[in-house]
Image (cartoon, rainbow, N blue to C red; front, side, top):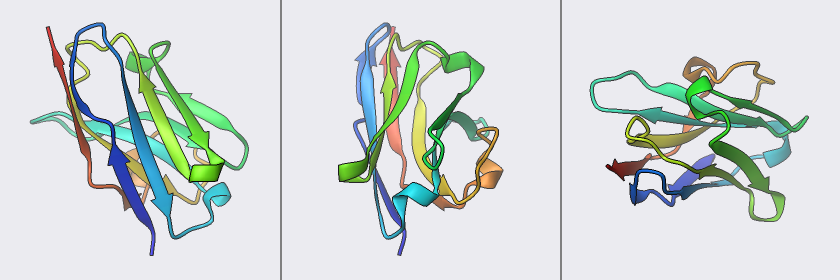
Length: 124
């Protein structure tokens, strides 16, 4: 059974940093792409970043380029999202998800296994 568990969310001041973790189990880690998504109240779930583990490619949505970094720890089967210079537009529930495809965009429709979500709040 595929299981994704997110952690690391919370409250931070604008300009601050948080690191989200996505711990994965139940599948061959190297054969998947892992993505981060976010959904704010009243808005659709949108792509934030993705790591295609098989070839090491990383993808970022324009609003987070230069501020967020996705990375992985193979030994821990964990993917991280380092979020720096957080802005008032960043608060949302953040989800990680898996896809077996070598994706070219961070499109939620291409991801099929989802974590439970983690709240990120940014105070001004």
